[in-house]
Image 1 (tube, rainbow, N blue to C red):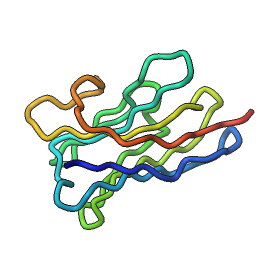
Image 2 (cartoon, rainbow, N blue to C red; image 1 turned 90 degrees about the vertical axis):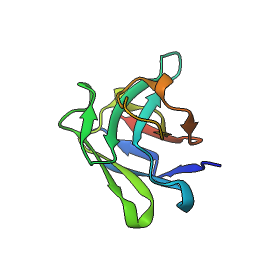
Image 3 (cartoon, helix red, strand yellow; image 1 turned 135 degrees about the horizontal axis):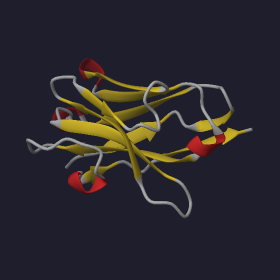
Image 4 (spheres, helix red, strand yellow; image 1 turned 180 degrees about the horizontal axis):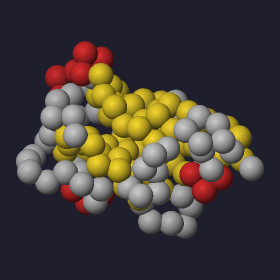
Length: 124
């Protein structure tokens, strides 16, 4: 059983920062590919950033340069540092994991395991 739990969401003013965390159950943490997605009301789910087990990341153009994905394997935790937040970043943010190689990209359909999400609200 794979369990992913996100935390760190909240409300922030435009220009501010938040750090999201995604903690996985210990015996299943080492996914091949793990990443962050978001979905705003009335919009499609959007892939933001993924990282492979070798540490190599991929970012969407919408967050490149503002968001940083990282992982602490000792803590079984994935992070998303979000800086220079904009009102359009308001959404439910979720982490997702994939254990099968070789694909690892921002397509949500690749990921069978999902957390419940954490809400991020950015006010202007």
